[in-house]
Length: 115
Image 1 (tube, helix red, strand yellow):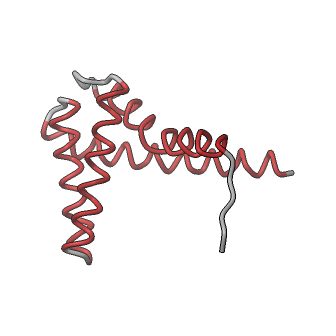
Image 2 (cartoon, rainbow, N blue to C red):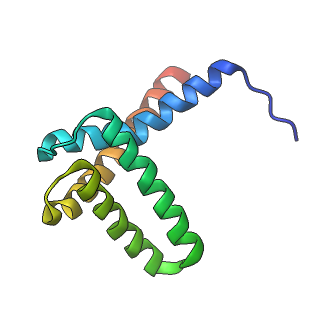
């Protein structure tokens, strides 16, 4: 199977991934009063969180991997964004909810454009 795509689709794909992952972290950082709420810090937190999640799932697996991934991402947000340790876990839940909302919004936008 051969996949053909134009250069413009890479840009669109990058913007889509950024809208789903980094922008919700930036919104959450603003809501929680993080000291490092710039886009570069949010992008760094997302990249580190993604790498840690992939490694945890690969080497541990199962339900324990889900729990450890949540803890690892919360700790990364705590360190990179400089939010309170106790609030970092709630921050992670809020970011997940914002990401689900963004995905729902993009899906509705796709339905609207398709019709």
